[in-house]
Length: 66
Image 1 (cartoon, rainbow, N blue to C red):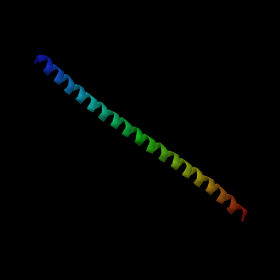
Image 2: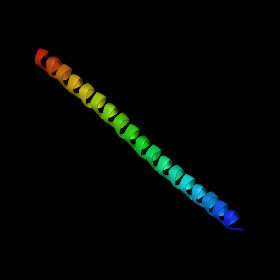
Image 3: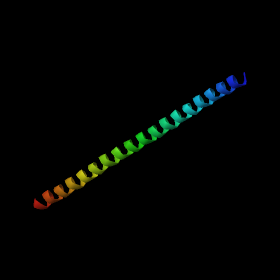
Image 4: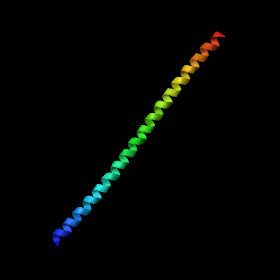
């Protein structure tokens, strides 16, 4: 009887620890997804500002010609 109780407790604790690891893994993956989103937004805004700066310089050149 004592062995069965110990076996049952070991199975219970292993299940709880596995559940905690999966929660930690999903939290880690969700944090990585947010870093990817922030990185992509940073790239998009950098390209947008570079384009606007380029467009502004072209417009200044056109204004100087006329």
